[in-house]
Length: 262
Image 1: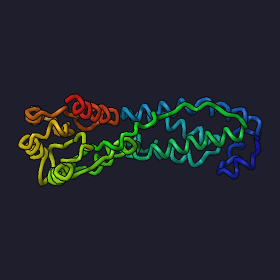
Image 2: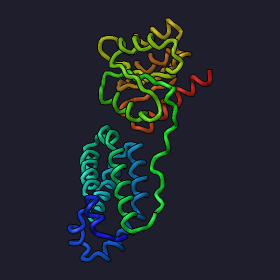
Image 3: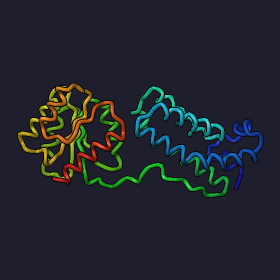
Image 4: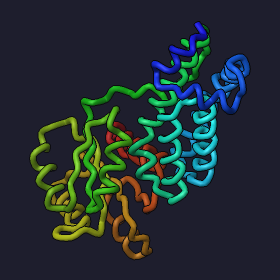
């Protein structure tokens, strides 16, 4: 195709790009390099996101921002810029919440470039296809809205995620779902107002629920005494804050597997 009007009609600032490249032939030739490089760059960006390596994440989204600006993909450039700012601020919650937008904008830029050049470039999948297990539910109990939303976002495409901001809400949800075999695990904070995590653990012990709904602890309280006290109950594991996406996925998998092994 290689019709400039196609780029303009799809929001590409081609005139600004030509100020850099000089002529359309150079733009076209260099666009091939963009298509060759960007899929691998996105895979690396995602890997840094999952390990909460915000330093390297910032470096690569800065590079993605620059590439997008060179070729006139201004929406992608702006999104990458925001990710650069937030990752430099070590805001992994923003990064996780808005990563799908960055991924979608990148894939759209690739699609436009491919159609413009009239060729198909193989684009590796940047994320594993979600395992559809919506018939399984996990309960996240934490007084931090940021933590609840962070975990809910991670599993949005795989599990149904129920949330509670204290032990009282958690026990109400558990009681409502005692006969619902979909509830397969709980992530429980210990230090919460009103009814804390230990009250929930006591309830589980008194009602013999640990085998039915396995529990793992997520806590910012890392004192030896509190962790030892938690392990006096038949919990699966303890995950200390701050944690990253990979840590959360790992502990949820262990918690659910524990139930399957019973």
